[in-house]
Amino acid sequence: MALSGTRMSWLRCKRSLGRKILLTTNTHRCASNDSTVDQKEVEFFGSIGNVEGWWKEPNVLLSMNQTRVPLIRDALTQQQFTNVDQHPTSCRTLKGKSIVDVGCGGGILSEALVRLGASVTGIDATKDMIEAAKLHASHDPALNERLRYLNVTSSDLVKVEAESFDGVVATEVIEHVSDVESFVTDCIQLAKPGGSIFITTINQTWAAYMIAIVLAERLGPVPIGTHQYEKFVKPEILKSIFQKNECSVKLIQGQMYNVFTNKWSWASDLSVFYAIHAVKGS
Image (tube, rainbow, N blue to C red; front, top):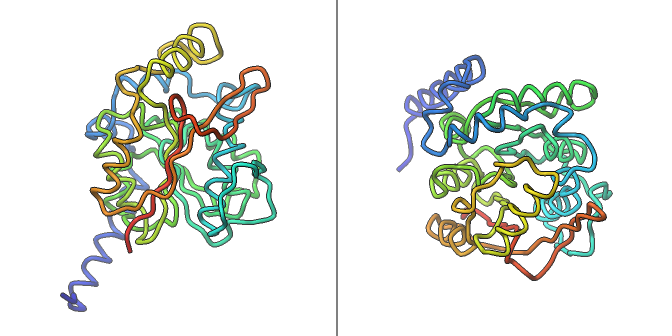
């Protein structure tokens, strides 16, 4: 049914007012009331939310741009994805594309996508992370016009910017939320019709437990307490949620990390790290 002109004007005013409130209100406290937010996770990451911690080399998340950036770039430019092309600085650009980086942390992925030409909104429920991301971005004025950071949750942003983004990215985030289905639904709602949703996360297997918790945290560089095995997510669960929301799953691909070279690569094995790409129905 078509909306009347008065109805349409009212909806535009409501969205505009909501956006102004969202951008001018301290959302750090309200984030804890969001059904997808685990307050313990917010407090934990707030304790490590500094520029040095996020951008210091060697860095597992920084090196992950070797795989996740080409995946996002190729999908949004409608190029055939290849696990051979792992060069984020490709000549193909994301100019004209709008992306929201949900759970952006210190801005490692957000900045990389802006440098490829995209307009990026980075959001995170942890205020200290957003401050760290803003501080790092402030060192490069060239980022200013196409990068903004907001201390909000996915549910907050859905209220004012639903169906606004060509790409919705949530990498290494879903294993930290309290309600996986609600979180993924938020991500779908943020995407435009025909838009892409990208998630990278950890499978719920004993192999993942040994690598992501025992080796990475207790013997490696990842802070102890970063992961909880019970919050790891099997790919079939995500696939089911996407299909339930009329999204087509285009890719489920395993990832591998070489701790000795600090390099990520694609793999057929989904047992530990994997990525999923889905497209929202038009």
